[in-house]
Image (cartoon, rainbow, N blue to C red):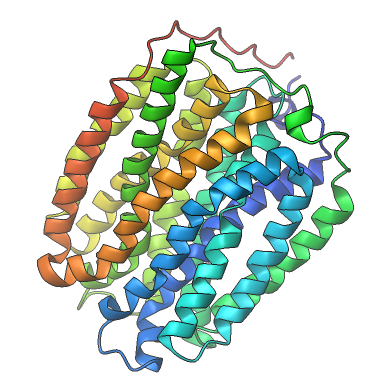
Length: 408
């Protein structure tokens, strides 16, 4: 009789606690970068700003380094080793969070958040290739990892809202920071030393063999698609707290309750990554990604014209498809690139994609202040349409062989 443990996607070759911590690391990565977006209203009041939109641009350095730092992080992951880079990630994220909690003005905050972004850059080009190395079902593993990352976003909304209400915004950085450092210590103890750096090893081969010209085309498409997708991701995840605050004005105004509502949206929407991850292993890759991009257009338009509980449900639909599209970018790396190069290729792709998408964070406050959330969501719908057009240029492939079902 099959069990959940047999059926669940499980990476091979690493202790279970290490696989668990690699998924927790994804949650930490996304959670920490969104603590500020959730707490910005309280931070703005303490630092003397009349409106949260005026303080939001100070966080752009975190998202810029989140992208640009992926290049050196990816190279070090392949050449130096992924284990040591993940230890640096956990401890560095925790230390940066504690430093952020000690800031006294906007520019100190900007420096601390930028440092956090530099450490956050390590995870995607290092942790995910470490997790999917030599697995038979990378789509499912990436889907589960994506679920963990987006649950981190849900935790950011819920825990930050509670800590801001009952203790203060500084505690919202201190508590997760200490947890991250503890995870780093456990990871260092539990993760075995690597026999060879990935660049010298014989890791997993690309799932699809492409000519050099087609590989360049695929890299260009995956980078452009990731950039547009990251703009949508950054705009929504950084703006949703304030979008719900405005949409529920006069109905619900308690930050803890609004945080719980947003956490529910993220938790439910995160399940889409499990579904999409499984579909990636079983269906033609290109049409699946196109349809996931196309559907974002109407749901964003609907969200632009709803309030209170209708906004809640339309925003839930938006996040289902925004989150559901995330596994494609990491699956493309596994699909087209050998393991010995994956961290470096992922780093280059992430640097371009997240570097461009950091503009969404920088422009969020000024854009909403100038034109409002409704018009901004229409712009996001246009970006979703552009993304669907970009994906059309992916190489055509045969449908993948079905993944064998777990034996009973």
